[in-house]
Amino acid sequence: MEALLDFVDRYVIPHWPWFTWFFAAMILGHIFKRTLWTKQNATKKRPHWFWWWMRKTMAAHPMVVGVGIGFIWTAPEPAVTGFPAASGYFALAGMVSVWGFELGRGIFEAFLHRKLDLKLPGFSDPPPKD
Image 1 (tube, rainbow, N blue to C red):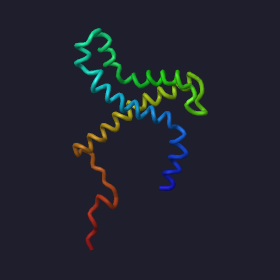
Image 2 (cartoon, rainbow, N blue to C red):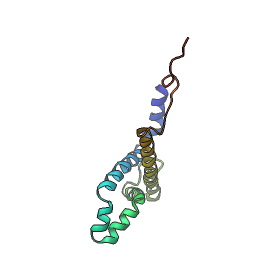
Image 3 (cartoon, helix red, strand yellow):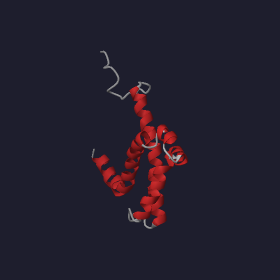
Image 4 (cartoon, helix red, strand yellow):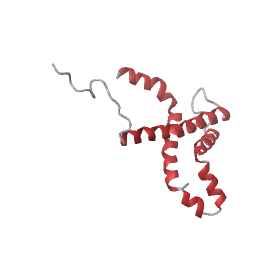
């Protein structure tokens, strides 16, 4: 446990802006996908081209918003200063958030539908018979 806390303290906490945007983009993207960028809105709301393109480019939204965050917050870490670096920093977090959401959803659905069986030594195996 001490090693885990040391790892978090050394490598995760200093990068809290990156992880904050990573998780926020995952959550907000899922909410917007279910409520705002739906097929129904793409076909019924006007102007149609706007809603259609916003739905088709959903995977790029976290990156574009990340560039905007980098434009506003130009020094999220001591090593990341200036607009280009900060924009790339947050755009990368947004890009990885799309991949992380799909990976997490796939693992969750596999566990849910019993397609993924994770066996842990000592927990999944029956006790040996003497």
